[in-house]
Image 1 (cartoon, rainbow, N blue to C red):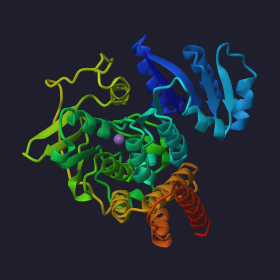
Image 2 (cartoon, protein in one colour):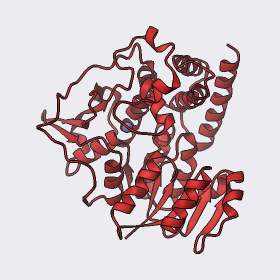
Image 3 (cartoon, rainbow, N blue to C red):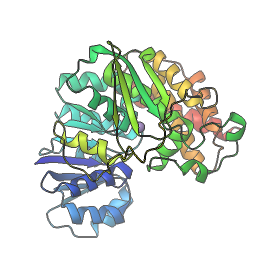
Image 4 (tube, rainbow, N blue to C red):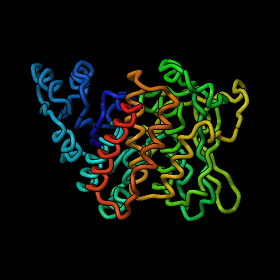
Length: 383
Ligand code: MN
């Protein structure tokens, strides 16, 4: 039985991870549950999975949770307790399914305690890939990608030498606005943005998918995980989301991973690795399947991808700047305070104004993150 900590258990990936555990009884012990503020769902999860430790990062949510009684579960609250949840002794794998920059510190702590990481928090690798991959190496922990595309790369690489990669073919659904032009993007509504054609995900990542910022973050994530150069990463728009990504090897062979789009599959593979186990994912029906099609991404309209390549190539603090500006912009867009196309302006402004610094430390990243948030908030207020 594998002992698991689920950080971000009430979010989209967290709830689906618990569903994976539910479908494979006896396989996992959920030792730790941690979430931000959804008391009601969190309380139900504690009752069902009876973790040894349960943590809510939000203090007032924690106070409400504490009013209830959960025999056998230690309850804690606050940001520090959330970070420490990643280091709980009996845990072997930490699933990092919280969203955004907030995932960085717990991930680093978990690695330093020798925990394997099932990594769903891509922002961690984007802003601090240099630091995180080096630490993973030093502490001999595995980074098991949960992102469906990187999970696909991971599967394609089993039994292969990553030195024989010629090209990572990173697939993208193209999101709900595929084929649209800059003019069309100006007045799209929050609801239109949240109606993703193929994947059911949390709000932040759904907005990122529509802007192609998500694909940009994934380009940087892929670079960090597999050590290729940026010109070896090719984004391929594949609207049906059946191929989850492909690798071209040095001999010209392309290996792809296919399945119906369901996040429980990459989550399960990361958690059961190196074993494969049965899952409720529906078989692909090749008689019923319509065309699988492929297109070039439109980087002039969906500038998220272009900015990510620029940030990745410059390196240092710039991926952190890119990410922080986007996090602010997405939150403001979801509140209805800025337009969808403004997201690009917020990112561009930050990337122009913030000076790029190299030789990263965690402190530098924390500072860059908060400086960029401040700059971006001022930019939004000042328009
Ligand atoms: Mn993905």
